[in-house]
Structure formats: C-alpha cells, structure tokens
Image (cartoon, rainbow, N blue to C red; front, side, top):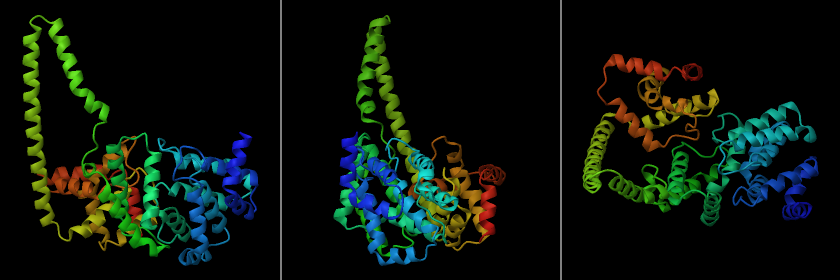
Length: 402
C-alpha cells in the first residue's frame, strides 16, 4: 500500500502542490488523489481534475467569474472540484451523496467554516443534474468547469467519450448506446449548457450532435433486451417443447399444436404492435399541427418536467426556466395540470425514477398522445388535480416568483 501510495503522489505531484498551496493538509490531498487513481477510472481521474484547474487558471471568462466570487465561495469552489468525484463507481447511483459524506468526514482535518461546508455539499450534490440557479455564480462556474470537456476540441472529446465507454465496459453495447443517447439529448434539449464559459456553447453542441450521429441508430428506440435473454429465448422454448413432448401423452402432436399456436400469437402480436405504432404516430402528427408554436411549448414542458424529476431543484432555477418560455403564470399552471402532470407524475412514485432529465422526443410524444386522446372534461380535471398533488406546493412557490 505504501509503495502504491507513493506512486500515486508522484503521478499527481502538481495537483498535490495545488492542494497544499490552499493551506490544506497534504495527507488529505494524498488520500483524494489515491481515489482518483483507482484502476476502474478512465475519465474521472486526476487528469479531469487537472483540466478543470488549468481552465480556471487560463480562461478569461472563468477568471472573470472567479473574481466575482466572495472569500467564502472561492475555497468552496476548490473543495467542490476536488471532492465531487471522490467516490466514483459506475454501477452506483449514490456517488455524489457518498462523496459529500466523505467530504464532511474530512472537514475536521480541513478546518473549514460552516458556511464553506454547506456550500461544498450543495455543489457536490448539484453535480447530479448540472442545473445551477440563475443568480448563483459559484454554482454556474462549478457546473461549467465540470462540463467543460463537452466543448473541447473534437479529438479531446473523442478521448473523453472513449474513456466513459471504458468505465461502463460492464454494460452491453446496445444498452450503453441507448442510455448515452438519452443523456446527450437531455443536454442538447437545454436552452444553454454554459453560464460563465459561454465560448464553449457552440463547440459543445456540435460535439454532442456528432457523437449522437455516431451512436448505433437503433439506440433511439426502446431499451433492448440483454443479449443473453435474446439469444437464450429460442433455446428455452425448444427445451420446453421437448419436455412437454416426453412427459405428456401424445406429446409430439401437442408440441406441434403449441408451436403453431405460439407462432400465430407472435404474428398477431406483431401486427397489433405495428397497428398501435401507426395509430400513435398518426395521432401525434395531427396534434403537432394543432399545437401553436410547438418548439416554445416543448420548452415549457421541459421546464415543468423539472418538478417531476427524482431530484430537488431550487425554486429560483425552475422559475428562471419557466420565465424564459414567455408564458403567463396561469398558462403555466394549466399546462402542468392538463399536459405535463398526467404524463410524468408516476416518475415521482418510482423507486428509481428519472433524475437527470426526460428525453425531449419521448416527452413530446407522450404529451401529444395524452392531450388529444378522448377524455371527458371531468376526468381531465380529476387527473390533473391528482397528478399535480405532489408538486403543487413547489409549483405555487415557483409561480409566485415569476
């Protein structure tokens, strides 16, 4: 362990020097760098930390935002950059929470104030969504630095995407492409990616679109079954038929009958599925024509969707997103009651609900299908009241800020 520890500190000597220059204990910094050198990390390493530090040093826009920070915010930003990826396990959904707890455990050695401690924890947890408040320069700069790789030159971006794939090597290719596409499309669906480092906006969007184009086209549909299940399904069916044919009297004839029945049912199900998809697409296409200013309406749906994510956003942030759509408070309330709420409320009941953001195309299709399906006005009122019950307090607070 001591030999490995020494190798780690030698590998990240410049980072350890930066840490010590802030007046923090070398032993704590060395433990952090040891975590960043874990073998399963390929992107979330000390190189990622070093890139953010250098950008903060060299970029004029980052320097301008840094100059606007208070004496409390500056150490909070440094500590958040160092600690937000302290714990990183691709199979875990609580990395940020665990990192925040580890930071709190190190606070006695760091000797930071209560105000700094609270801000650091807030920033670490913010790295789950990267949606900073509209007037929070500290949070905006932190999120911009963490996402700065999205706006890097294409060769650097490619290296980043490859490293992320290596970290998720345990995920099947089709499933990874499906999930990766959803994440990238959520970022593309935002009005803006950067608040301080605005010069990266154009290149980041170009990189995201380019990676989406390179992903497997089939990943834009539904999440595929794992390959072992798809490959084993025919074999399992044959084995079951063989068992039936050997156990039951007249088994061969029975097996043949079952086989033909299964094939017939599969054909009927496939035909019904195609008919249903055709019906859904036709209704959605009709609805798209009837909805005035659909892109603006979709921006409203995306903003209201923040209320239904398995994540807690500040009221000011949601209000800023809603304000940018240009709708009145009453129009926003009715859109939540009649359009967004009935489609998304179940996400709040899901133990592992969506937390990063809803896919814009999926949300558009679901809402257009829901709004224009036959439903009595009374049922719509009941459904709207029920589906907004859990978010109503925050919705009213947000509307009061408009």
